[in-house]
Length: 190
Image (cartoon, rainbow, N blue to C red; front, top):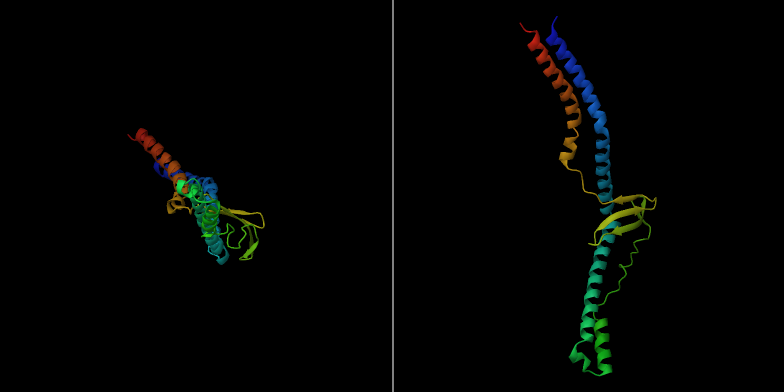
């Protein structure tokens, strides 16, 4: 009776079964990782379309205009409490305020692009574009109601970590049987 050969075969069989269990247990993680990858690709492909590039530029220009308007409003408030300005006559004050308002105030509309309009992008209609506080597009809502958020791409290490499921599933039972065989062989040796 060759106990060592029997334990070796049992270790290999349990290792293969453990590897299959590892693959099944890692499936959910792999599916989540793949969905993140696909979502990132869809967002980037939509952002590369001419319409979305134009919308992103319009959003950036709108933020710049908002900042200019806020700066100008602050300057007008500061001007209205300036003692030298207050010494001027009412007509002179109105003239100066009118010139200050006319000088460089841009319309707050986004260059004719209403973000809620439906626009054709690769046979998909963009219903809404959501922008975060920093002025970056954070999500695109399609006319189907599907929201495509901006996501970071999965790293290569995340994909490589998926290989640990079947590898661990093989090595744990195989190693356990090897240790048991070693212990049994120690007791049976004369």
